[in-house]
Length: 306
Image (cartoon, rainbow, N blue to C red; front, side, top):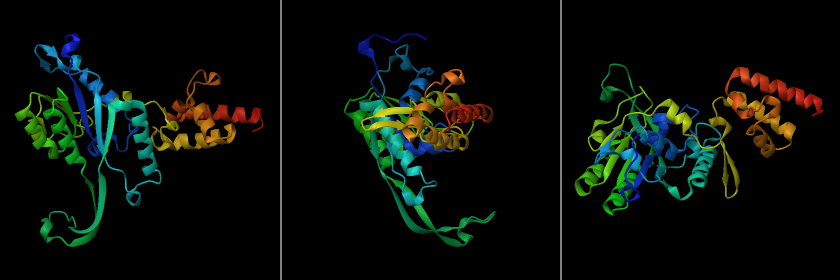
């Protein structure tokens, strides 16, 4: 790949992430939730073919800064017992790992009772019966993303904005950025390969568009399993690992043998000489490897009478 220009021509780039869009477009029901978004965008930029003044934009970007727009899960609507804790752990890990290069801007969720037409095959909506439902909506995140992107561009704080969303609410802000500034607009659609299409209205606003995110890009762009925060280590949640059904019983046995959750996590995340240098937690990703791990753990417990 060609090298960019000298340091004076580096492009100040900021990424604006719609956390809700990213989660439901790429991360839900996957083992990739422990995502380092800056690493992901950097990976994508390395594949970019968009040029300015005969030079690849991806080669000229300064260290990326990220604004991450999200809202805390309402506990009464959480789909699992640890959903709220997992989200808080993730946000803490992001802030600890990316430090000043990341800002989390929080909106909120609003839940209220409403009436909606029941879906019935081959019937127009207005002819279907209405039922009582809970309407759960994320508030302020989309508006905040649009305002931050426009404000940063119009004040000359960035040379390039990259929005990671497929939501058309951002379109008016992108149109105004193009009309009133010379800032480059990049769009990354939070869509896994072959799962959907980029919204045309967003694509029309962009100088360049990445239409999907590859499985390997997401897998490579993960935070360390343990991130050191100001209050101690922040661990990737067990439920966010590839096979929590295999890892959970191993973790419980490791806690029993090692005497504490902290000691168990340290052992799980370090190479073990008795396992050929393999890392125990990585052996909990498939049925064959976990059997070998459990066999070793049984031998260890028997040998030491634990």
